[in-house]
Length: 206
Image 1 (cartoon, rainbow, N blue to C red):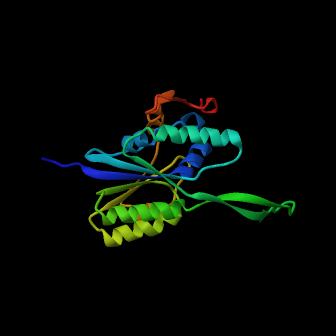
Image 2 (image 1 turned 90 degrees about the horizontal axis):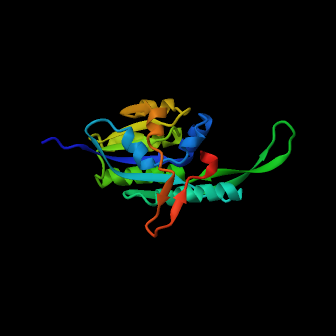
Image 3 (image 1 turned 120 degrees about the horizontal axis):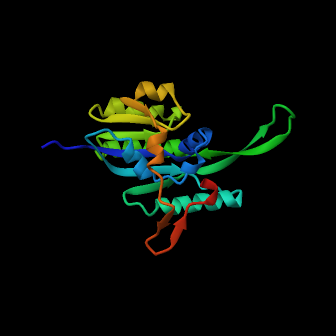
């Protein structure tokens, strides 16, 4: 009897978000990430776990509220875990006027993804690692998995409007996530939590 290949999905939250934003797909922000990963699998592959990597935004308040609602919706899914990085503010000078401003940048996501991919490979938790990102900083774990675990494969799924030649060359296979896969992976308008509370898609995402 044929046994399907085990897949663990590693989702770079902000890379996916900005890809959707660049493609003007705001109405798909209310995205069931587990369904998205499942919808891009090839025949003979089973999604066994999904890992989502993000950072909590703290400003502006309306954006923080939308993200919190989305994260709560994700927390209703089984076999999905969320890993948090953080934001660090860096002082940058405007090239046009010379004025200095504090610009937040996300930290730790690529490190967290790399650690989880390597740890899972070592523990033999997957046959295929599905990486949803176009961040070339993730080249290192892809290269390490190919060198240390020759029987395992890494498939890279690029978010809309995102691509990395480095990741493409290192992956065993790659694909561009299409609009159709995204459209059929959206949460229902209302999501009920275990305690009975109902989460509603933010109106800005309709």
